[in-house]
Amino acid sequence: MIPFFVQIKCQLGKSYDVANRLADSEIASEIYSTAGEFDLLAKFYVDPSMDIGHFVNEKVQIIPGIQDTRTIITFKAF
Picture 1 (cartoon, rainbow, N blue to C red):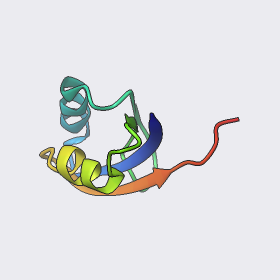
Picture 2: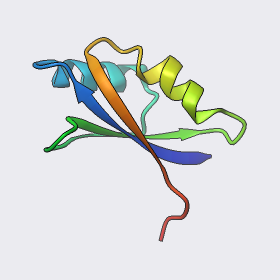
Picture 3: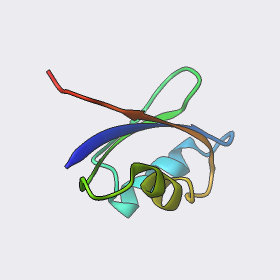
Picture 4: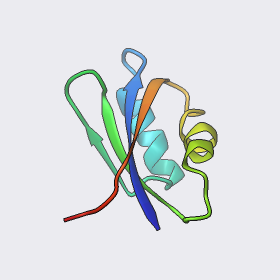
């Protein structure tokens, strides 16, 4: 499985709604609230054959209340 992270900027007042919808969809392994430019940080795992861009586009960005995302692809865990 390939891990990656998505920073999520929510519409004002929608952070908890977005976090709950992400949790209910069971597509993220971890979801954190964050301070700064983005409101949430979610960790995902996909099969190596899955296109990460399509996954984010079709599974994450469709959640109501999401305004913007930034995908972070990692290389190695230490």
